[in-house]
Length: 217
Ligand code: AP5
Ligand code: ZN
Image (cartoon, rainbow, N blue to C red; front, side, top):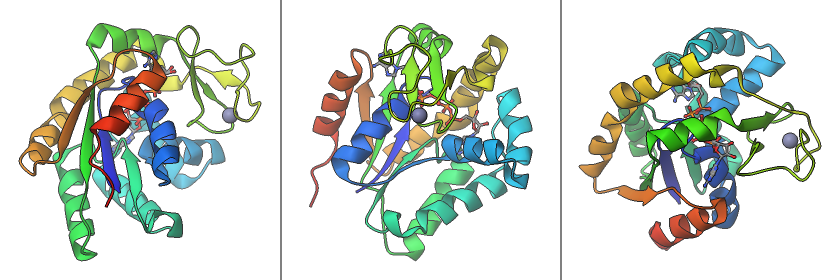
């Protein structure tokens, strides 16, 4: 299965991707997590990405597409993947189509997580992520770790993401509406979009997502 997850910042893409990827036995590929890993390792790519991310803007396509393609080339992605946060504008969507076409592959579905804006703001305000791995995601109220401030997965320290400050969140939402939403119509034209209201408990959303995805051949 080759799936794209789309939805506003804070919709729960990363949270759902962790469960869906496990259920479907495919890797979870998050461009946001890849950038954050580069930032914590202090790589040139991380240094370049950080200034865009801290401002709530998209990292330039050239850098992002190369990084995503490089990740999709890894052996664990040979039989499928769940893309989270990529593509994020029409240029990236077209680049992904080209990349897959070259390999005679295609997407199976684009899962669009819909969450009202006031809920997204609450989810982001309480989000805490792990210092060791930004894909370990919790919420101070809705998705608490067993021990406050400690990651359930690896025991790492939990903290608030730099781009989760209020002004940056507003900018990220604006960028989502102007740059990312148009890809939903692009994929609707290919009959790939599955829309899911991503409200309710995390495990309920996962169940609905699994039921909504096309069945595996
Ligand atoms: P990225 O890391 O992709 O951030 P995002 O798209 O803004 O999405 P988020 O990570 O904020 O939210 P999410 O939907 O994953 O929600 P989560 O599961 O954490 O990108 C960050 C930046 O990197 C971008 O701004 C950009 O600069 C750059 N970037 C990344 N990809 C790029 C690309 N392709 N091109 C260019 N630039 C790129 O959940 C949120 C919170 O809600 C958590 O606390 C969670 O515990 C909680 N929660 C989840 N589900 C529920 C539920 N059902 N009920 C209650 N709470 C819930
Ligand atoms: Zn962790």
